[in-house]
Image 1: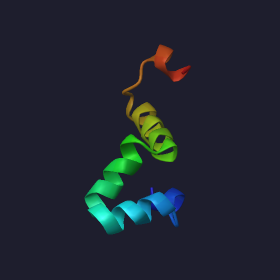
Image 2 (image 1 turned 30 degrees about the horizontal axis):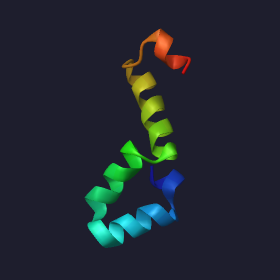
Image 3 (image 1 turned 90 degrees about the vertical axis):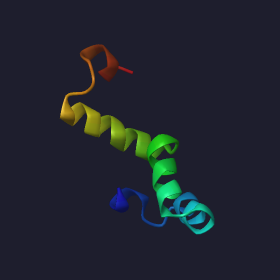
Image 4 (image 1 turned 180 degrees about the vertical axis):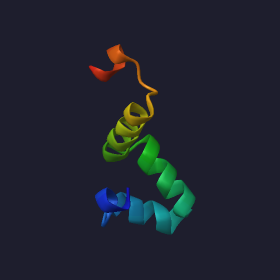
Length: 55
């Protein structure tokens, strides 16, 4: 995630205001880049059903 989010304003802002843990959680649960990374990780781990891959 560090490669994709390097220099992200929202990550830096959240990290400064609310801490690294909150910033990381925001990236994974709300940021579009983080959501895509999570989706690919789930696909690699086999956690997504075939019909879910289409959306």
